Length: 209
Picture 1 (tube, rainbow, N blue to C red):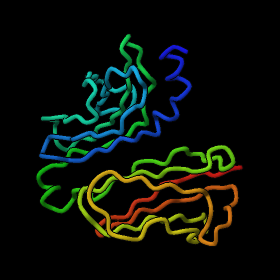
Picture 2: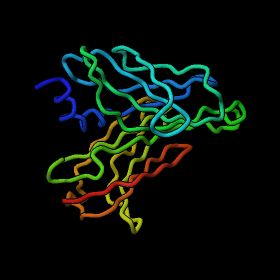
Picture 3: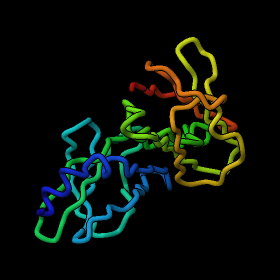
Picture 4: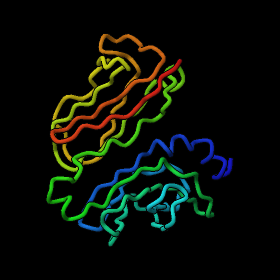
């Protein structure tokens, strides 16, 4: 099987390798991602811009798994994706796109800097019988008490996945689709909520059998 064929087959696995974006200094964004496991991987390409895909800028960054975007205009929101490239130049599909705002000095001094980023869940929709687990990804910009919980559409808590203090950095939590009583949940739409000491974020998760 060629590298191109292999990468198309396992592209869902590459999309699962989430991105983390963290503000560094005014005008800078640091991007961090988990590595692709292909044996003939040559490096990565960072795509970014102030509009959603197609992103305007393309940067080949080599085999490193982090990159610092510098001197960006403050007050703008940037959309960022990553691809992997093999040694013959074949390029994978784009990773999941995420976004981050370059904060102004006023926003920073006013406490506007995010404490966490709730990034993604994969797979979503989550087919329990096929996928077995879905992985919830988030990143903390500082150490904080963290609660990560699943709720149904009635606002009832299904299960608490995390309730403890975590250090800054990328985090992943796996969920098997069972509730707090170890019963499989029903097909439907659920919400996962990430709460830290200064911030609450929610995203939707679809589950089916």
